Amino acid sequence: MTVLKTVGLLSVQQRKLLLAYSRNKQCFYLPGGKVDAGESERQALCREIAEELNVSITEQELVYYTHVTAPCLR
Image (cartoon, rainbow, N blue to C red; front, side, top):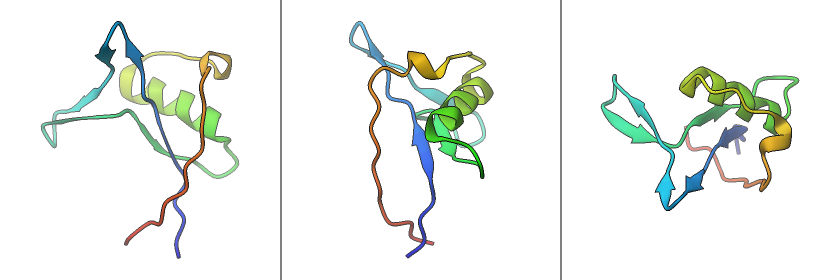
């Protein structure tokens, strides 16, 4: 079984869910992506948020954090 490490941000503030929008795919999605080699999950999430939303967050700002493993179907 192939395991692909990914991260995603689920942020709800004042009953509003933060989503990113893809102009190419014309759809909304939870921001996140793959974890690069040598990178922690928290580092990857901070990097992905900066790349996708142009927002800088620190690892300390990730208050609630969990890990989920699921099979990668390729």
